[in-house]
Image (cartoon, rainbow, N blue to C red; front, side, top):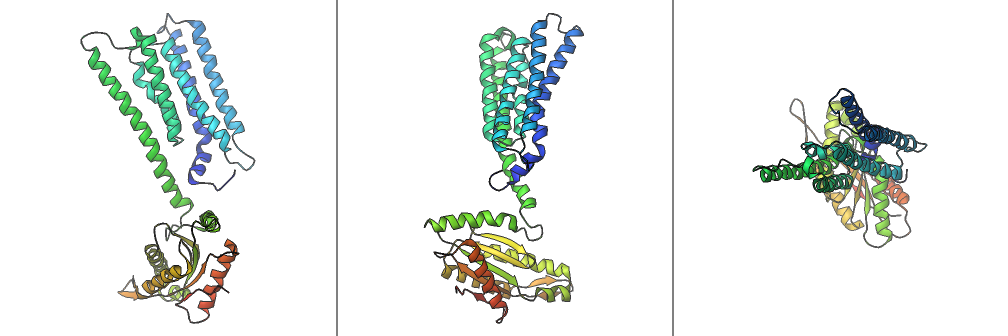
Length: 360
């Protein structure tokens, strides 16, 4: 798989096999149900050739789903992106074909009330384009069926015909909108929630090092292209071990959360804060060295002046040391991180509670 595995990719890898079988198995269950009803005498006038053709086609749908499962993963066990796209839209086309087959072979007036249920299988992919494609295909097929089999599919043409048609059309529109809205917001919030667990530290809620490279590489590309600049801050809590030894690890956790919140509040919305590990935090700020140093100094002062409430009315205070390195021509991203780290440890060995911006 090319690129970094996103939260939605992780979700898709887990459920791909199930989703790819939902629609084929649903189709096969429909054909088995209709066949059983026929032989139980509930569909006595059915065309047996069409019925068996329908059963064979639905079996082929299942074989298609199994094919996409068999060939859908690379050697590392990740879903192949191109195969996923083909599989999703094949499933959508299968749903549209199944709807049309049932509409024309076994038409009855209330059938189209279930039209958009054929879209629900795709909704689990949380792909708005896919669900919109399926919904549109089903609705267009349904409207065409009104002209082809209107005598069997439309309500009885009595004094309530207009009211019935209006009510059903409104219900179809609302159902289609609901499925698409749920798909859009479901995917959006699902990704956000998964991001919290996959890429965010559970204690501080900062991004972890797993997402660091993608953000830094993107900032570096923009800087080398001349469209923006950025700086890196490496921050460490001074004497953090003493806090844990004196007040306990619960207090240490509260200190980490306080420092993380203070940093997140002290940078701009488009800056990114990572928990580097232990009590070290890395900050990517979209600023030049002078502005980055000013931001770092404000964060340092806010942390120094802050107080963390501990049990028995004890207020704990901590300080931080920050090493800063700004982008400049000739520096790689790895070198920037190395300089920021060296600046941090220079500050730690020369008084602590300070901001260091040495570039040599």
